[in-house]
Length: 473
Image (cartoon, rainbow, N blue to C red; front, top):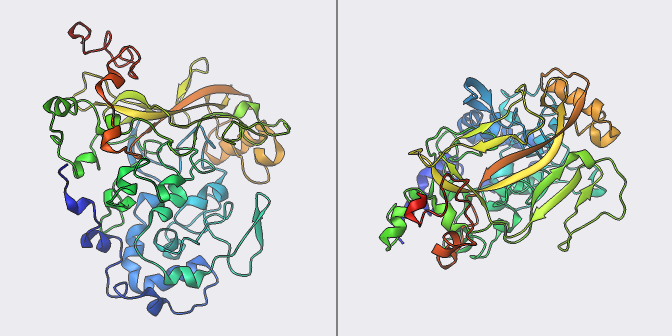
């Protein structure tokens, strides 16, 4: 297999892009950090900025910091991203800041008055510490537990972070560092992304041949960064996509990589991921259904499936899980359509919060694998719009179990009117599958798609039937 080796191993240019190859970082950071003491994360950032002020300020232009960017959504140009997107997990960020922003690469985003212009609010450690001991407190608005603090969450006491130790350890981002947020989105490990979970911290080759194989690739081997800390790649959950690939398999692999010319022809309309990621959630199950409408009941004991996954939580409702999931396939041109706050919806139909764009006649579209997340969530029954929900905090649903109050607070925070009436809708979202690439020998074979029990829904893809029969094309 022909590969461009510069994409497998992090280049010196990438290290420069991450702010690591300056004179200061060329040596042992412990020599520059000293012994502190540090009382808070912002104090550590100020120390970092003594050498890396330019990198820190450049980082403040990245989507990891802003949680939004200028995009054309539903025909309108707007600032849009995680900050304002809707999902069918915990619904939305507005009114839930201290909880959601535990995954923000900053400190102190506890409300809508967070100062994005203060460089000391940037959290350098969450990406660059290498001890594996740095953890943000789940309800701390991006802060970890600091020395001298006594905090608990979920009935468990959280140990303070040794800020001097982690500051002295800084280096290239590890998979564990990236995964501390990207593996645990949606409230826990393997909830949101079917192809991103804790198993990728140190996977076997069977789980992911790139990260677990001989190359032992890091996240940034593919998600390369520029001098402004702008990292390649974007999530369909918070971006509509530009239609132009920011990264892809052909960054390393040539289009005619197969010895079999017929397979190379297939690759013109079938994404590499379709054949080379035959299933996802390989190690443990991922959440596939979340029904908020059943929340609020005291059920004991908590029902669990055979693998021990909880099927119900009083604060969240019913769940379903799937392991070794066969993806759902759609034509995909790199863009999605989506529902945003204020959009009118039809409550009698499944509301597609995000949906893949493309069809078989689209020259830019290929058949692509997806996780489809489904569930039920509240909507404004007066205005027929998606409801923002305040789950966390003194007025949150998790505190008062009052849906009307939770929606009232959530809608106000999202800048949306609320009629005072709510109901329940079924929703779906698409999550492109790009990780958990199988070893070459485990890729799909012809009969996996072209047989009576093949995995493709050919009619849904726009064919009369299996296109191996010329009459169906």
